[in-house]
Image (cartoon, rainbow over all chains, first blue to last red; front, side, top):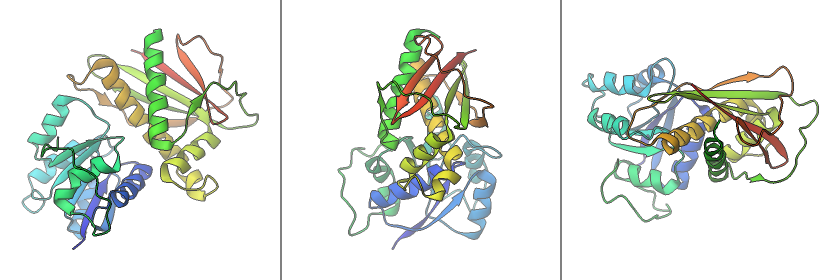
Amino acid sequence: MARDVLIVDDSMTMRQMVKKTMRMAGLDVGEVYEASNGIEALAQLAEHPVAVILLDINMPTMNGIQLLTRMKGNSRLKGIPIVIASTEGSRERIEQMEEFGAFGYVRKPFQPEQLRDVLKPLLGVRDDGVDYDADTDGDLF
Amino acid sequence: MELTTTRTLTAIFSEVLANLAFLFTDDEETEPALGEVWLETSISYHGPVSGTLRFRCTRSFCELLAANLLGIDPDDEAAARQSEDAVREFMNIVCGQFVTSMHGSDDVYNLSIPHTVELPETPDLADDGGKTSSTLSVDHHVVQLIYEPK
């Protein structure tokens, strides 16, 4: 069964690119909800339970780290897998995200197969999805 | 700006542009179009080293960039509507790649939220040999990259 996704990114262009890339990657995605910052994300999560959150770090109002911290302290939200999708390349920042409980990390710009590798365990792939070779050996960071 | 920094910035810009938007820098001596509105998008990074990247281009280039990023026709109204958002996100990605390339991935750098302003007139696009800026041609559009160290 297709699972719902929340994309949290302050760029509408990037949100649309992520949606397109998920389709290209053959992921089995249901409804895709969008938020442009952490506050909007919390509002979306109050309305729509999702299977996965794709989260940018650098956003105004409430950034990705603040949202991750907020969710970690909320019993209803802390179990939702979060995949960080960011331009950040610092090892320390990526490790920090992992410590905060993020499920995985993809660095922008990413290719469909990279997104597929990190999201496939959470969403599965469509029967008609293109089958890229996985290249992660289980390490999603 | 040191020549190597300019070269690194130009190389990263060209690579991200090609991979993400399928647009390519070339060696054409393109003249800036008359009567075009120019935009400047800036983004800063802060860490052990700090700096600002500025990207100057016409609004029509931003619309082309948006169209290519979204996979839509440049005449689609979404390309015009999202042109500034597209160039901001594009520079966010360029800056992230630039910081890692120049300063490595050991230290944490915080990137600012990219900001776009309309310039009152066509900017000075004279090439200074890569010391402070780099003027490029992309698909018959002139664009300019500037790096300001802090």
